[in-house]
Amino acid sequence: MDEIRDLYQEVILDHNKHPRNFHKMENADSTLDGYNPLCGDHYTFYLRFDGDVIAEVSFEGSGCAISKASASIMSAILKGKKRDEAERLFELFTGIVTGRIAAEEHIAELGKLAAFAGVAEFPVRVKCATLPWHTMHGALQGENDKVSTE
Ligand code: ZN
Image (cartoon, rainbow, N blue to C red; front, side):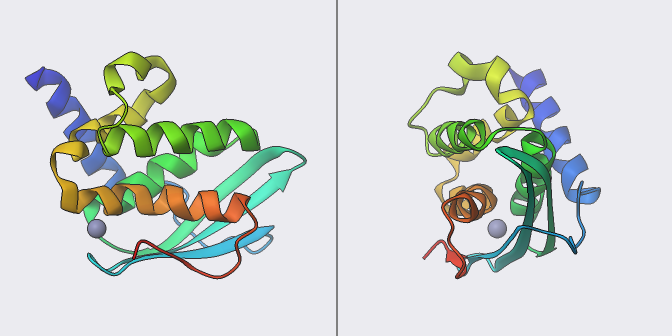
């Protein structure tokens, strides 16, 4: 279990240090700000759709390692996913980081998202990990004001 934990730690550190899709998107179909005042995490998310499919996700902004890694991994995972698949992952991800859903039962589906299962042990970090997902969810729901965790 320690080995798995170390591996997950590495995934988070890598994505924090080298965030994927970390740039502004000029031709975005949806742009939404996400803000977590408790920690100071503040990002702008950009989504581009191709019909029902999320063609591209990018983000910019700043925040702690957990929020940045979560945004980076989310942006990579959602590329090519349908809207309903993205909503399903939103439910699953928020479920595992709040401890409502056992990550072990969904390892294949979670992929790198499983790296955040340990966040459930640190309640103050839950909002950091879920901020990108709540913002993406808001964008899919047609929200165009900013999303805040408070
Ligand atoms: Zn944070």
